[in-house]
Image (cartoon, rainbow, N blue to C red; front, side, top):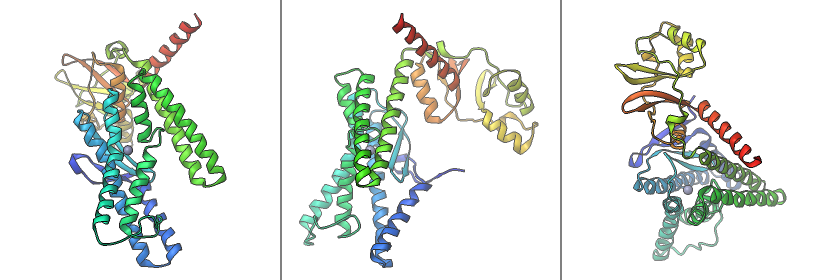
Length: 363
Ligand code: ZN
């Protein structure tokens, strides 16, 4: 089952809502109902959540559109209860570009809050902007405050918040990228610890945020460590060159035979010397359960897949697999199929690199 559904594609970027995001209006509606007991207030509360949701989408679009200016496409934007996530195809390598991409999101909320502030100042409505809380006060004023909160929250110098990326980008202008990430991750985890600690004595919500930040910081540090280990290795040196292929007209029975005879799980499907698809093991198993072994490979294979170049770096190959959530991809050199890269294969490479690093240090 798919846990998110698409609600539109502004600027050609699909915006998806994760089902758990719907917890937010439900929770907020319940809070307002408990406070006021009026249906009108609940409806206004739901309208407020909708506007908040629009502000989060605009924030993510800010990241996505600046990334696009640097030639980096965004696969989609997903809204989760904890905020939005813009899935960029990759992060810019130039720290200056990463800085602008990270700043663009919060800048959108500053612009929204600033515009509201000006409009309210100009307009005759003398709302006391300071006399509101998140569930009371004038609607417009609340939208302004929630945007200010979004800016403050996102600028916390901790991954996965924008502030963490900004801090890393600033450090990376002077230091090595993986060193900069380590420092940013340590700062993020110290903050996460502080949140959790304060949360113990005050708001349990802070413990949750602390946990979320802690995990985000650790993930980012691991990711960069891994990219560091993979850097400088071309795909041609890491790929599997001993592999089997299938033809589109082959049946799944043939694929089963090859699977059982070796260790290969996914198979490139080749026609007239070109790769026309990838038969992934999970699709094969699903198709077997549905239609049995006589189904043709071409009806089950994936027609959209990454084709890696033998000359590209394993680091970018890994990123491309990650974005597509693929476990393997064919490797081509001058239009010819020359190998395959799988996640297992990259994992082995990392293990070997790690072992070599240790012998270097102890030797
Ligand atoms: Zn952001």
